[in-house]
Image 1: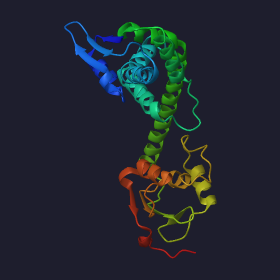
Image 2: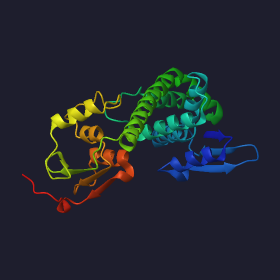
Image 3: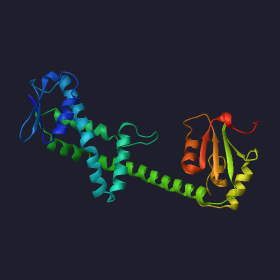
Image 4: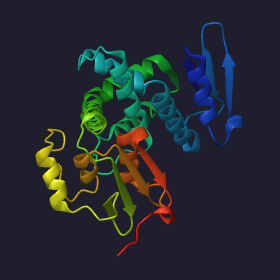
Length: 272
């Protein structure tokens, strides 16, 4: 007979609910001092073993992982700002299911699963609090590296947010004399003066030179967002039928109330 004792009811319930098949072989009991999930078979083997590993992994990920990361943030990386800590943990939660392409995180869940499998292979009784402490000890160094990667992502996000704020400050406070630009999404993004003539790269370079700003100095001239930042118009009208164009969404975020989005059919000039 295999038995697990939990001091926390939520953790016991998560484990019990994670047992998918043959649940009739498991029983859940509440005692004054603890909660028990018990397998009525003679031993933990076959499907019961596989499901136990998966259920333990689910409980650890849902109830322990972020707490362990928070401890590492405070005591290994010396973060003490609660908002910073919470944002880093949010990123960690987001990356649980789907890390960004190109980001190579340490295989923390592989090591965690391997430890759980090894731990359960020789036991008929598990005290969950002791078990979770042993899990943390086994993956601690890997979790430090994992948390470090999440911190790197947070720092990139923080730097990007500062850059975004500086772009917003430019378009809201820099007076370049440009009142209105039209931006057409037609085989690329094309900017037009209010008189109907397209803006050239040479004009954009000239505005970057005449109205210098550190936040746009290194932007590539061919990037479709650069002309809007260089000319910093009082109003930007975007004409597009796309609803998920990343650069257009970025411009809407930067210009805020100074930008408006209209269908291409409302573009006021002749093309070509």
